[in-house]
Length: 413
Image (tube, rainbow, N blue to C red; front, side, top):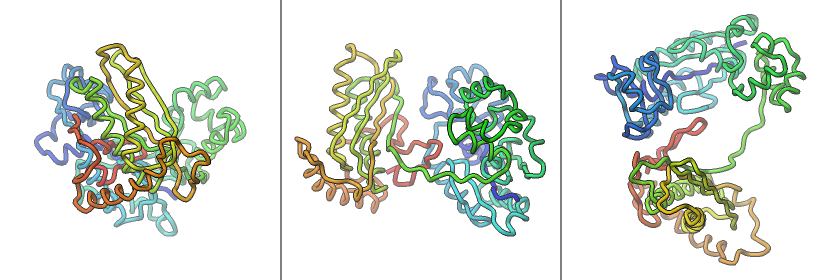
């Protein structure tokens, strides 16, 4: 039975721009993070792909290949708003079971929905065109499980709809390469080749135990079962870290500017930590220089979630790293990560309290943080903050869209 309906939107950011700006619809469009000729493309529409423009290509190089190219700077808050409207529209037809990313979501079909799968998919497509916009096109896959439905959604892009029924397998899959299957990276493909598995047909023909041996763990057996249309239940994943990074533009590559960026990224990560009701007891700070040199430092501390404590530790790690750099070194990117996270009820007091009495101070700061966060939510913007706030190039600190994470509207305060 067709139990999974998977929707994968085509060149989502670029097509949102085309939908919102009629004057660029007939032209190739690419989206970047920053307004710079040296910025790289996050995505591009299919018309731009036809010119050979690839994700990660610099704007300057792409314009040399395609002078008519339209370059738009990403608007994460706009894309998240469209994403939420899309979810509302899909829910009118069938509930969204899981959001995999800002442009990929899955619906589990039950009962009579399985028999009406194609009609439901067609209704979703029509509803999206009417209520969201005809340029924001979905590719839809229908299959017995999420894995095959995702594969199906990729098989006829853009704006396609493919059904992979159990009784038809493996036929429609045999034209694919191993790397077309989700979860098979370049390294895994090479490992499969070394085991004599060169094609999807070869993978289909081996046993589940053989697949497990190739992977070296149960994931190989799961992959084999999914490929054969069998249901696979995975244990729920747990949140392990909260972090933010930023590539620095030319005017922000000095230590005094980079620290301002890290301050804002740190408080954004701390805000997300508090909203999810977690504490952290470790932090990593890293940065990369223009010449490729990397620095990374980590420290442990008593479990906390307040801005002042976390900013203090961030400054210590950053200062330690900068002290090891050559004079006038240019920083290219910065990154902060809060980890060793736990729920408040999972955290015990330290047997040997930290010398700086973080825990006692954090109790007081937590009350201040709760009041500050409440004010910011009430006003819909950051009216109160700890320390000064710099306006970062590209904006949207903390609102970065990544696979598996769709920012909330609060991330854009």
